[in-house]
Length: 459
Ligand SMILES: Cc1cc2nc3c(=O)[nH]c(=O)nc-3n(C[C@H](O)[C@H](O)[C@H](O)COP(=O)(O)OP(=O)(O)OC[C@H]3O[C@@H](n4cnc5c(N)ncnc54)[C@H](O)[C@@H]3O)c2cc1C
Image (cartoon, rainbow, N blue to C red):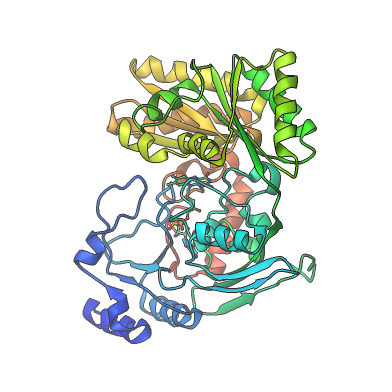
């Protein structure tokens, strides 16, 4: 085992001394969201190029030092958490947008570029990069690729996996696997990049990517809709899908518990006069989005699905509606401790699942609070639970995931497994799938250098 002081000197030789942060610079950071205890690590290392990442990994692999990649540190499953002897690999110096190909609709970027910068650069070129989520200002392209992030537009464009044409990955031993494909079609053998997308930094380090851009969809029309029951929510979803000719981009549902937690505390205006059992933020982007959305609302009204609705009359009003849905900051800083879950299950099973969950929680914690919102069109619910009992976290996990098992739901719709959900992977994946994941991990990272213990316990 190399001595700490020698390791720091050697790492400095690879990336430059000023790019090896130690002491107070480490403690000033958090490696979990919501922020928990200050970070602890041997060093934060900030390479600027793929060559430096490669040299760094070769060194750490040779010397038994674990490397934990960190992007914007907005991940919600403790996937970037470091231990005292680990190296945190930061991408804050790898933020270049290297190329834009307007005819081929691609953008080539380094891993550390924030999602919002990519979105803005695409828009400036008259196109769009359709991955969008509340943490857009901090989350990096590398982080979104490594978690296969979903977000608000999955319904129309798919997850991050569907937006990646090419990928450059550095393996544990420093090998640079460059697969910077820019073509829509490429069936030449195995599509290796897919193995790394969503692998949470456990199989390889993403250093660069070729992103697929889409044509700008046209102006957006946004509305907030109040509904009385969940069947009406699903009927409105079907109606909106049918009547928008593929233009439906977002269909976000919020239960009253979510609005109770964020509207007043976050300084927002309630969009409708009363609070409804279900509150939907619906968005269409197309050349005639406003007409389409008005038509959908009228039809929903006539069919008795809609109790009340407000159509955003300006971009500012649309932003104000989104600010409520995106206000996770207020949510997590309100009730503490708040346990966060990101599950998926068939839409028809959602109400029964939530009723069973509420009653199981109340049986044990009479005053427990259940907050629900999410990307219902994708079968994805974000469930947040406050019991007032930090020590009971494991018991709440057992209840949330136990009720999911018979429904063949997923313990992670989009946030990944990280440290927080690895004990429940078998709710969603078969024994054979988990065994193959472990074999892949051991083959690609035999010494356990890359983000050890994340996704799969013990390796
Ligand atoms: C307010 C808020 C809203 C969110 N909304 C959504 C949402 O709607 N949908 C969604 O899917 N997620 C959402 N998230 C979760 C989070 O934003 C995403 O998981 C995002 O993809 C993480 O990006 P990051 O750069 O912050 O990654 P980090 O948090 O830094 O890292 C996430 C994981 O990826 C690994 N990693 C990071 N960079 C690399 C790299 N270059 N190579 C290899 N591994 C790497 C890390 O080790 C870790 O395991 C939200 C989070 C917040 C705080």
